View (tube, rainbow, N blue to C red):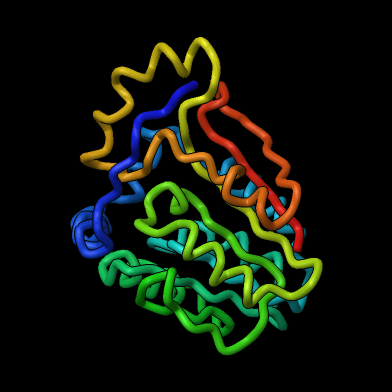
Length: 213
């Protein structure tokens, strides 16, 4: 399917939009079929082990944190990066409620964040299609990944199917609420690092793409 040129919003515009959505994000998710099963699938694809260090770029309100913390165990570490102070405030409340001591929150640009350690896995969950500079962010993350580390992108987009062609005229409409580019093709960007494996689900509208360093 030919895709139109993507014009992504600036990081400040994105952060402002998500700041407004932060308190209500949990209620909005089901409207866009963002069920826990999709998040579990993404975390499973990371193949995390107890003691691992994982970074999530675009962590939002921390909806993936329970699955990530459970996967790495108390000896592991989870680093959550997001540009939206409002979203991270919600994540901070979640961390306090759960009493986690191995989760670090970083507010900033995922394309320029400086990690002080190598990591065993990187997760982009519903964030790669939103980021203003996804290729730059990918390259920065790849530098901090250990050999055999896994990078996973879980996101939504129009499939090259009859359903995708049917939805194409209305695809831009939800972008006032959910900012992702429905024509993003992260597997093309990842092909420069290794052979990506992509699995689609929920009528092909969502996908998990994985590459191993």
